[in-house]
Image (cartoon, rainbow, N blue to C red):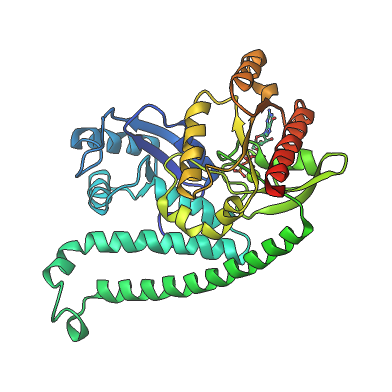
Length: 364
Ligand SMILES: Nc1nc2c(ncn2[C@@H]2O[C@H](COP(=O)(O)OP(=O)(O)OP(=O)(O)O)[C@@H](O)[C@H]2O)c(=O)[nH]1
Ligand SMILES: [Mg+2]
C-alpha cells in the first residue's frame, strides 16, 4: 500500500466533495505533490452510504476526469471500504480519501525514526480497519470455532501480519516515550517553564518559533511542514527564560489514527506548562480552525492548561484593526505578525505574566 495510489506525487487529481469548501483539500493535494485539475461537488447533508456521492454525479465526475486527463480522484472525507470500492468501480480510477492523503503527506514529511514509526503505525491501523471492513462478512461467518488454523483466509494472515507489526511498532514507540520522559525530567530540573506552540497547520508556529528564538526551524507554505518537535530556550523578560517547543500542526477532520500514533509527540503538548495557540487570522474560517484545534487539545486532555492566543499574520489581513479588536475581546490574546515582528513584545510580556502566575501558584 505504501507505493499504491496513496501517493499522488505529480499526479493529476480530481477532487470530490459534498460541500463547497474544497480549498483545504486542494491545499493538501498540493502539499502531497499532486496537481489539482478540477473538482466535483454534490451538496449533501451527509455522504451516501454506498457511493459517497450519487451514481449520476459519479458518472458526471467520470466524464470530467476523462476530459481533464485526471489519473486520481481524491475525496474530502474518510470513506468506508464499500464506498471506496464502489466509487473506484464507477469512476474507473483509483480513489484516495482524505485520511489516506493526510497519512501520505505525513509519510513524506517524517524524518526521524520516531516520526516514521508513528506514521507507519497510523497507516497500518488504517489498513487494518479497511481489511476488517472488507472482510466483515467473512469474519462474521466464521466468528468462532473452526475459523483458525488450516481454514484461515489470506485476509486473516494479512491481518495477523499487520497486527504483529503494529505490536512491534508500539513497543518501539514505548521506548521513545520513555526516552522523552527522561528528557522532560531533565528539562524540569532546569527549572524553566515549558511553553508549547500549538495551532492549525500553516498558522505560523515555526515562523514564530524562529522569530522568538532564532532557531532556524523549517517554515514553509506547505501543510504539515513540521512533524518532529523542536525545543529552544527563549528569553521573555530580563531574567525570565522559558523553553519553547514547536509541534505538529492540527487539522480539521484529523484522522483519528494520527492523533493516536502521534501520542509521543503530543505528550510534549500535554506536558507543557503553558500553551500558545497560534491562529492564522488571515483565514476566513479562522474561528472554525480554532475550534478544530481546541477539539484536539481536549482529546489529549490539554485544554485546561493556561493558554495565550496569538492572532498571527496581522500583516496579511485586510483590516488589522479588526484583528486587534478580536484580540482585545479574547482573554489572554494578542495580535502579532511572526513575519514582521509586530506584537512580539506584547506576546513576550503576556507569556512572562503567565509564567509569573504559574510560579506564584506552584510556590504555594
Ligand atoms: N504574511 C505572513 N505570513 C506568515 C506569518 N507567519 C507565518 N507566515 C507564513 O505562513 C506559512 C506557514 O508558516 P509555518 O511557520 O511553517 O507554519 P506552521 O504553523 O509551523 O505550519 P506546520 O508546521 O505545517 O503546521 C509560511 O509560508 C510562513 O512564511 C506572518 O506573520 N505573516
Ligand atoms: Mg511548523
